Length: 368
Image 1: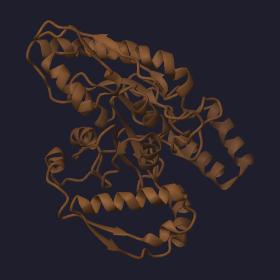
Image 2 (image 1 turned 90 degrees about the horizontal axis):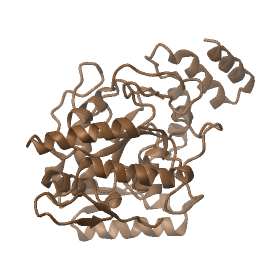
Image 3 (image 1 turned 45 degrees about the horizontal axis):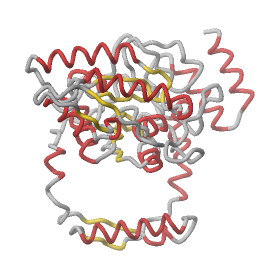
């Protein structure tokens, strides 16, 4: 995909034009331009919306593009910053929100048809935190149906922006595509069995699956409560740390949210990795792993050692039994949202291959 160059805001401090590939700047780079008023949030949002209009029909990163509200929020951000009230590094930054996380007044479909009319009245806790930090929601990102294994057949499948037809990862696929394509500077994803990590890897991003409970799940439609994690997907580790700093922390509305203090993630980035110990089970690279992937992991290990980390050979226990336990544990996980009962039974029926049961439950859901 070729980057499109934009002539954007006149430099308010120096009075000179500025030309940048702004859609591929990092979150922190674009944030610094906004803070210095080299760039205006309105023009950034407008440029990204123009880019979305060109490439979204092929890439399908979003289920809902929120252009009007994003531009209105950008105008407010510019006005605040112009008055000297800069809220911090997320102020005026366009981001994407996975479509199982509530954004007030916008459908939360979880990638399904049976929830297409569900419009929450309030933001999820993490969305409210991002908005308070000044972030601008530019759209709800595409995802697999109910955060499971495949996309709903009524929705166009997301396509990898680096090479058409390549894998985009699993349920947070739209978040990965949208950030990698330069539609936004970061996005939220969820990870139950790899759905932050795999789309981030497939799309060339830095994604973080935080410790369970570190990030509130209030207002997030569950796949499996005891497995679900919410985290950022960005272009750089520093960008991901910036988003995680905002969304992490205890939440009275989520009793599973951790009460432990939130560390300063950005401060840790420059601390070096001399104390880091990394265990590697090399036997896992001997079977069912492409040679190019195995070699990239070996090269990564060499790089970590050169940077000061300590690698240790380890032998992981067999994974067959834990993997066999995942599906029943996920299906037995409690679902707290009242409207989710039929949907969860439907998901279980599909997972178990019971088409007739799935069709019956879908019909029941359709008639209310």
